[in-house]
Image (cartoon, rainbow, N blue to C red; front, side):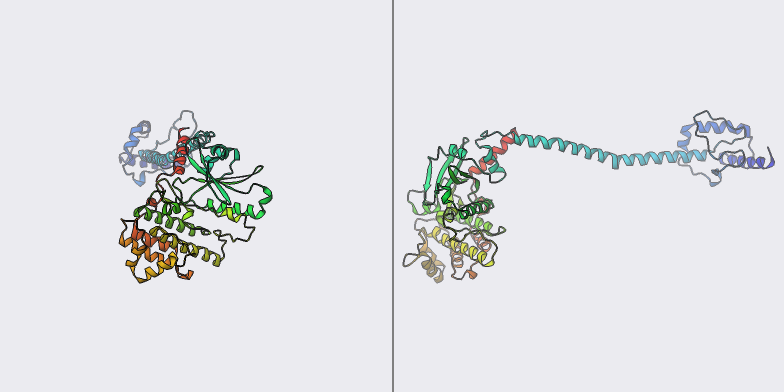
Length: 470
């Protein structure tokens, strides 16, 4: 060993001795076994974690001469150099701290990244498994399993399908069950195997030669317009039928069992409607017409009168539009009332016309009299005279069979009638304003004005419950 190597060895020995006990001189051969025991004692390293290490005790990571700068990474048993100094306990403390820090970071990685990722994968897998099961359950509904054919099930759930004539013929008993017959159309009552009732309306035209392109255009546009209503105070369109041989054009609608409002007000064979029942009808009409006017584009009813209002089983108002059967034979001479195509004047006239007709309907409902303009003193002119003289004069217009009317409600209805039947359409209020004023006075909500026992609702419930059971 040369002089320089001996000097370096002496310096390292002094540094090691100061780190382990502060001795000024150490017997090198006796110190090596003690340091090896420190390396083998893993618990000692843990005890040194929180003990501060003097800067002077750290050995620089470099070598000089015969002293290696780092330990060998080979798997063979390590042989100590005769003059090699064992690493001080301070290095053990740093190694233990690094190991604990690594374990702590691994746990944080596990908690914040690995576990949420595994949970997300499990939820995704569960959703992918349940969705096909749900779809397969709905798809297992067979024809007429719930009393509704496969096509009518689509009508209740998804939209307006095209139906087969044979299917409707079976439901309507070979079209022998006629409810009403008019010059342009016939109404049949149909009953499904579950007991759900439907109305099938058919044109009186029996030959394709009499059905023009104009007729077909009116028919299809009306189907599109009516299918967009989607209001519980409107007779919903369930489907349509079109065949060339035999020639057929039909609409399938909800069935309202209590006839028309016209019949209930003017036919003695129908059950009398009291004041509260009439107020419920008024609010149902107001909510529905407002809904129609606020569609995009807005829809105006082309023939709003008491004969166009049907009554449900619990006497709620259900508006129906049968104007298409007259339009298909008009040969283009009749304007498409109700189908507002965006022109400002047409939209304004159609909506304002509905407001006027609604005012006349209010007058007919509270008076029980027909608004026949052919008479010398029509109902509208009489109402204008009575309303202009004061609220108390409205009593003279009241149906004498109504014994339970409310004065405050009658007064508000009189003011609404006066505003609706203004001769200048620009002075008439919107249906939103009318509905708000009537609801404030009468207090019947949209839910209370809708039918509580609707065959359509029961059919929907039956289809959905059967799908869940499957």
